[in-house]
Length: 140
Length: 393
Image 1: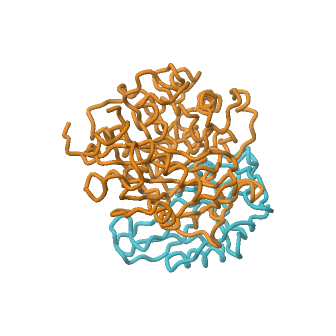
Image 2: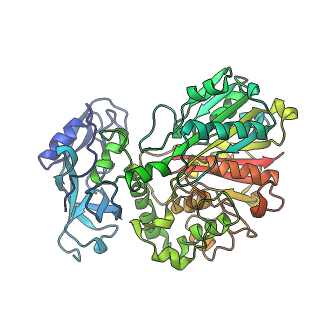
Image 3: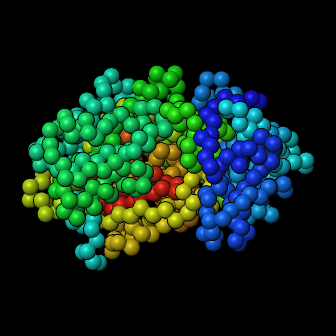
């Protein structure tokens, strides 16, 4: 399914590293240099210790769906529907929740708690958007 | 309870509305002036009494076509008044009358008009359907940068995961959720100004098309054209006013991460605001006669019923099932004007506040709740949340 119809993100000093990493298929989140806490989206300040020095960390582990929706409405001409939007959390990355699309399973099979792998796909404006992939073992 | 809370020094003195419809072929300024002049007259005041103006939204906060169809300076220019206080509100104003109440309580103005004008109905017609959120700008800014590029192009896509999570946690069934739009439609049938007045059944609801699961067409409010204005006055001016209502308590607290997708526990929303409101009054949930709860989407009413203490967390499904408790004649009549689901998306609790004032004055016509003395009003839900108790003077 094509996900390129839509509105691209405004890129800022804080978010440019994420979108650059996304083009390489890698999920970059914020990590505090002082306390090591991770967070997403990047906010230029640690939500745990309020440190201003942050760096990036890559999420490579699988995650689980916290919640989701399947959108059926064509909000823009050419938008292909239906598609799933999932909110994913990672046991090895507390403090990180990332929204994305979902591929690799029937829309009716999506469930809270379902394991997913990190992935990306082409999105609007030439950006790569998070697009998680249902893991083996899911009833596809 | 202390009389020192600032909101006790303010009253809501007037409400006025323009014609409200799916499409009204008049400008936003015309609709706004219709509402503003009606509100001033309703308060028993004259135009030159007004010395404060506030508009929602301020700061160019218009993410969708038709979202903001008025301009504060044009309204002041048209009225030809002098103002000593003005405000452009963001969602953070929590309630439309929050900032104006602060202004009159602090003596910065005596009578403030706050207005909200939408032309989202016409915008939908122009676009050939509900336009995408964010489509007024070329790129998605701020928190929306993490949602719109995914195709989550409407607030319904942002709120729907909360509903999914609530269904998962508490076992709410769509057959139960249906009673919010169904009961509100029954109320709208008693409101000659409501948008949708045809009967709506649970079967109709279950047969409706999905918008963003688990929310269907009837879980979503209806975009309209129209304007609502409120007059907020200093309590010192009560002798000059026709029929003011009191602001017993109000609050607006954000206690979590302020973006739709990052809110930590999506099955619990509005609790901090509700607790802050109840801390400012001796009244309790059992004292509330009517509830005007924000209903951009039906699930938001579920949040508020629980957060405000009308039922326990997870208790809303049983509370709304069958619709008896939330209907006129029940223990907590809900959105007696039809709410935004059937009365129209006047937004930011302007429609809810207008109805609260009418109920407290006994001016709600066929949908009047006998002896209404305490009305609760809530706004938005999700990370942004406002709640107030209004009482008959």
